[in-house]
Image 1 (cartoon, helix red, strand yellow):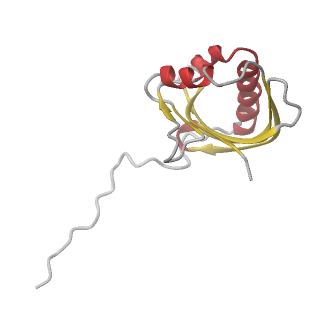
Image 2 (cartoon, helix red, strand yellow):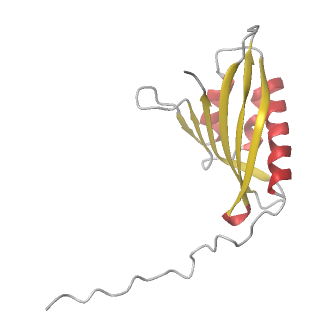
Image 3 (tube, helix red, strand yellow):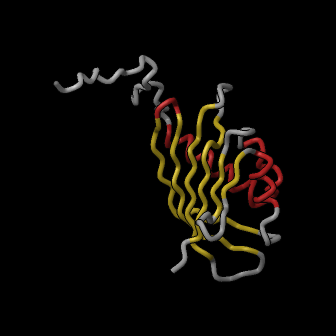
Length: 150
């Protein structure tokens, strides 16, 4: 006789994907990107308040041959403040935003990056998962950065 398998239990804590949707996700994403790159380009040591201690994660050109994954504000700031250039300018070409469950916002950016005195910009893409901080603002939960080469 075949064993009887009980039906799967569904937790009452299952998140309703439509619960707490950020309805002004486009405005939030646009405002965040403007602020983030302004701070990054002028004084990236001041980016710490946009991340959350021990929670936020950054992948910076991460791959198995060259690990680039950082967790928590301290590790992220250490990476960003020790990048090998003095001056930087982000030129945003496109911003795509979508709402995520729990009031979050997913932001995808493509653009040009000018470092130091280079005249030829490098292409980059960056993805941010923003989550509500509980105080009316957002923090960066996930940050993924890639230079687009090839």
